[in-house]
Length: 142
Figure (cartoon, rainbow, N blue to C red):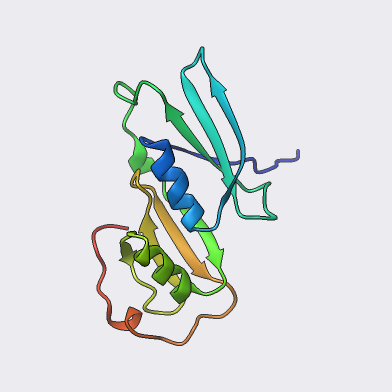
């Protein structure tokens, strides 16, 4: 039996804010579909060259009130980055809170506008500890 990864879906409250956040991570929109009958929009975003590993942003036009609130069962999205310090500085400069700073030069966590936890991992070996990250405290939950 063969299994193939397709995508991870997350519900979003503000489609444009969510797209902007994932663009800050370097993802690009790969496709979009809208359903007038179902009253929703699906936007697939992936890193360039990795279109087969998308995150699906699902935006319900009429909101999500009445849907089950079970987001605690969702862990996180994870992306490897070339330089974790540069990525965290880029995100921070654009208003994203670094919930778990990359004190170890290896791992950081941020949250999307919809409170989705996103893990950032350094490609290859961990970078040497560097300020301000090495002494930065956690902020909120990750």
